[in-house]
Length: 72
Image (cartoon, rainbow, N blue to C red; front, side, top):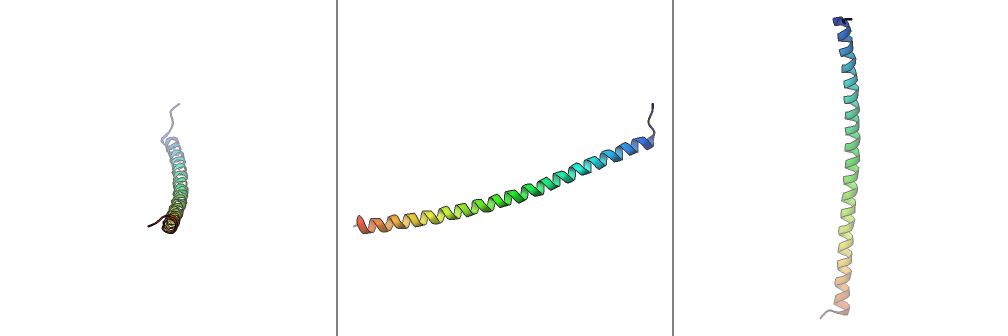
């Protein structure tokens, strides 16, 4: 049985709608991923800042300790 042009256009329209729905889901996922990545990058920056501050404090303590007890 041969399908009419009208039937084929209906099928094509349905497939286009399905493709557009999937594209919308991909866009939503992309936005979600971007948000999560930005949050992780911000957390990474906080960790690096904390590590730098901790390193400074430890090096200062060691420097003062060596001046008091072992320095010339």
